[in-house]
Length: 111
Length: 111
Image (cartoon, rainbow over all chains, first blue to last red; front, side, top):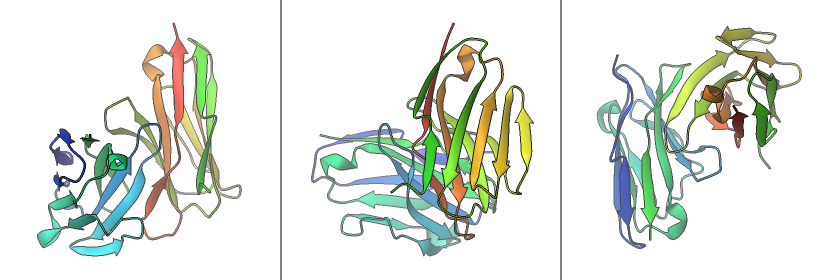
């Protein structure tokens, strides 16, 4: 069974630029999550989707972050404009429900 | 304040020693996960606990969920250098499959 796929693995941008991350969850998993993990900290939930609807986005900085999950499968997380403090690993996870599976993450460095 | 507290924050043990990591919640635990993470990599699923008093083991790692105390413990017997990494607990504290994570415990095992 294929796992959660994320791309790109690494991205370096300058502040005020934009960036987008893509996630393809495990087939059949209705719930998809985006987490932000800053170095030395645990993952912080940004947004939770159930199929293509948003369940929780209370911790998403909506002035610069946006996420969508079209057709209830793939998801994209966008940051525009990026700030230095956005440097982190962005983790995508999916669940069916119950077991929570993570992708390898996308490491963002903002210069 | 952190809704999931892990202790200790870091741990250095000699190979062959036993160790315990704790995860305590300020709210009811509807489901708790333990993951292992190596620097720059994704989260590797270890165990999921759902019922009070539940205990699971995998190789030399045992996890318990004490629902009354709203905490879980992860115990490693006869630690090896391969056990080194960051151990994260994640939990559903709302019953809506919204998973939050602790700050992690950094384990180093000296050969």
